[in-house]
Amino acid sequence: MKLIIPLLLITSLLSVKTAVADQAGRKHAENELHARPAVRITVGVRDADIVGSDNFVRRNTIVGNKRGGVYWRNETEPMAVHRVTFENNIVRDNEGWGLFVDGATRGTIIRSNVIEDTGAGRQKTAIRLGKQVGDVTLEDNQVKADKPLFDERAKK
Image (cartoon, rainbow, N blue to C red; front, side):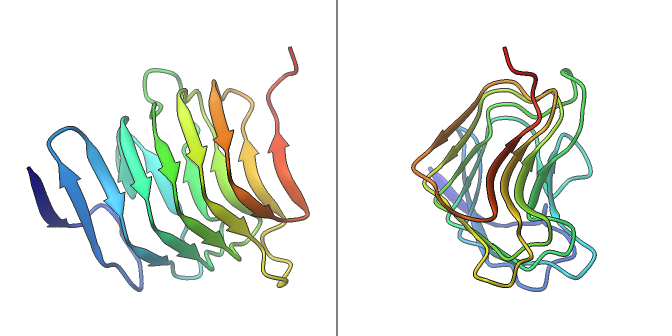
């Protein structure tokens, strides 16, 4: 059973469509997320735009954020979000980086996205992985940035 609900978790945005949610998990889909100059989209367990573990973030357009595109908050293991699937999104021309997975999160899947700087020189890094980040699956992403991947994790 699918329910159409307004995406109330996304705050301070100029343009928001509708999200689709089902009983199996939370989905944030088919939104245009054009943030105000001092705002980025955050993923966390509380007071975030996308809240909690086991989320699906699909078919969104995230453009022109002044403090990065999408940020997984720097939280310890018990407070971090886990098993977020981020797929089929467009992340474009955000300041600094497109996606920054931070904190002790695990099970993140980043798949089939377009993550790009279109020539403005703003989104220098496409995907950034913080020092404490656990397993991340990166597959079939189209990336255009000075630095496609910046991985801060210790090499094993």
